[in-house]
Length: 328
Image (cartoon, rainbow, N blue to C red; front, side, top):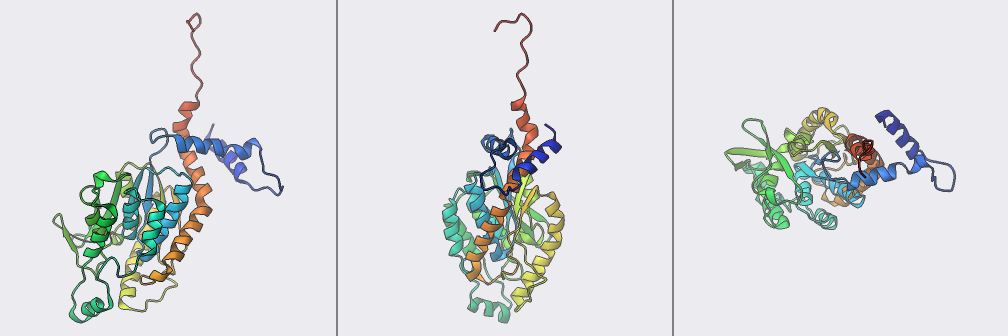
């Protein structure tokens, strides 16, 4: 079956009908057995699927809602890559925490719960020009994951930070997960660069907003990314910290234009108006992740089916006919 023919059949199958009775035609039922075949196939008989989680501050909690929908649908995920808040959520997901636990953790997040970003510390930052520590982030992630290392995660995981002295993107795939996640979301200008492995590391969102390349380093052949960008055209900074976040987000947005083209399938929860300090809106962000993923789920399934056809087709080929006179 050609790609064009399959696309036509999938389009027919996804078309809505005005009739009250369900459509039980062959065209309507075609995607179901195909999707079951993709879900059941191990990587190798379908493309290896990479789950990519963008940066995005507290907006990145929308990733949890996307994960919930994909997980409930049985969407196959083989490897995980994240940056900044995407690294936090991605590490917990790759570490094997159930979706309900991810939802619980995200719901409890406060702007100062993973750092010493309290009012008193912010005053110290402004008055005494002393950067804050993000050590509490590392401690929390280590507690949630039980001190897990990269080679112990349930799914292969990678996250990205930036070397503040060289501007290089540093991809972590080995060692302690909690330390790497801390580096990946270590906001420059607020937190002290993390000295680790002879590097001075800050938030990876500055150089790799949508870490699709990190997923490919893990072997991903088809990628599904959730992107939680700031709508900087609609948001007006109200503080120095808001302005700093906006500058980072603008850079990330320009960078992600090219990265979007490299992703196989995109899900974009509409969370661009949620600010860095609006932790009360985290439940809203997660629900928007659920809604966005639900609306795009069928398209994601069809996209992966199309990418899987060349590999699955080998199972559909008829067995070669026996030679004349051969024993049966």
